[in-house]
Length: 274
Image (cartoon, rainbow, N blue to C red; front, side):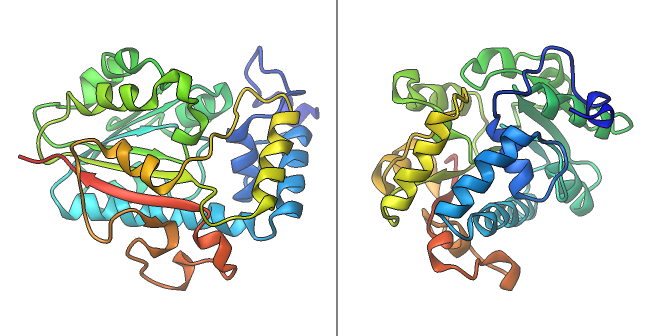
């Protein structure tokens, strides 16, 4: 690790074990990752050419969905698994539409949290909470959530490329209900989730790379029906749960050149009924 890296690595971070947050940062072209993260990213990209495009397609979806929510009256957001800051963060997109928008980010990765704190240092309408998404109450009752979020008004709940890291034994459906239940009617829930529905053995080989890497983040592939059930009582808005690039694309940048990468991740948005 170089001296320059040492300056931005929080104490206690094991740089010999890959983090999927840092690998995702690498896939997006970011600079806050280590050799071990880049090695995993390169191996997966070799097995699934175009994976970087899939990462960018997901990021483009983030922009579309935040603008959609703002256009439909949402002025506060809870972004679970926000990752390492890069271009086009939720608060930047939302506050460009309306400077009054408020955002609470959540991530457990110490590097993601440290850089979010630096980025948000002068923004009194956005904050970061270091927490594991499997402990909803610690997040919903955090100082940041209490100060910035009004649970009597609609909230945009975002879990992008997050839920496939939650194993079935951790009860993702039960966890989601604990997040959705406190939200006011008119709130929205957006997710993206990796699926094996449209992929071949290459995806199995790619998930094998992550398993062998000893990362604490492990992929749990789910079907369209399984992911659809994660919306609970929330009503899906058009076009429903579809390939990430197919959710209201606005231009070429929203779609990958490799058709397989447009269907690697399902994306959808649900609204809590009145």
